Image (cartoon, rainbow, N blue to C red; front, side):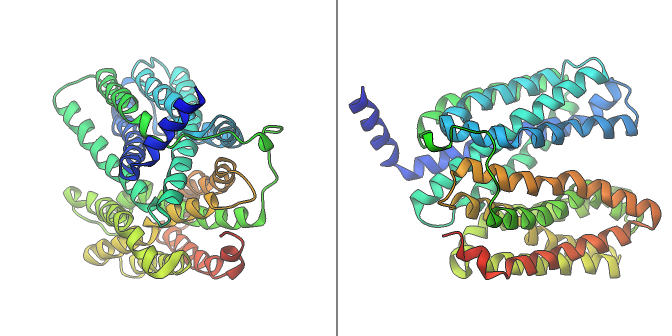
Length: 393
């Protein structure tokens, strides 16, 4: 049996290109599931007769589920291996997506979204651990392209959602289609994932004391994710209320950000290979700051469109780079390191958008975007600390 397992692993590692495709498709399917849910939020809101306040409260269930399972996710991946965990949680994630379509009241939806966040986090840690392993095999930066696949899935999920709604297809049927696609992907591509091996040295406890290098990476991730969250949730509102764009052009702000972020992720590995991770993070911080400040000082349609494009390029490579650096830490397993960094980074998504709303309520949205602009400078300063890159090799 051992000889069979050994020969199977040799066959897998003999085709790194196939491994890369498999990992990319798992990134894609995770993004497809999430974007499919996001595309149907207005329909679900109408079906359950939710107010904006109720929807805002319910949406918190997803990040809460993600945050409370960060240590558990890292431990599961470390104990059982990322490939085994990925095979199981990918299917469960798709099943929970299907159940969203059958929610009949706010309490059912809240419980389902909490589960969606919990399992989504397990998918996130498992698939990024696979990405780190593939990158180590290639011995060069390829993590950014994996996250580019996730970004492309965002567009694809939105288009499928738009198509199904225009065809009058019910939400639960739409989600069932996505479920089938994810099952097919898992069946075809699971055998080509990198076989993860458990680490018995880290099986004694679910919690590991964070290292200073992981905290630093997490803070950099926090600044980037808070900026991403601002663009996801508030770019349309900014174009509507501050830029005063025509109604049919309000989407331009969000679209310009998303397009350059996706492009940036696909060229990010080439950039990192030329100038290094440290310089990439520093330049990204400058681009984030420049783009946000331009949108605040010059709230003109064309200026803000270009500014949001700069922000998209600025945030494109940050999370992949941070995850890649975390996965290279030799003191702790990749799954645990990624969970540590994600725990801090994801607070940016959780806290950034509400913080913008509170500041905008007191002053206006320009002040909020002005504050987010300085996150780029803070990231530049953090990235300039040489110890951050000396500790992780």
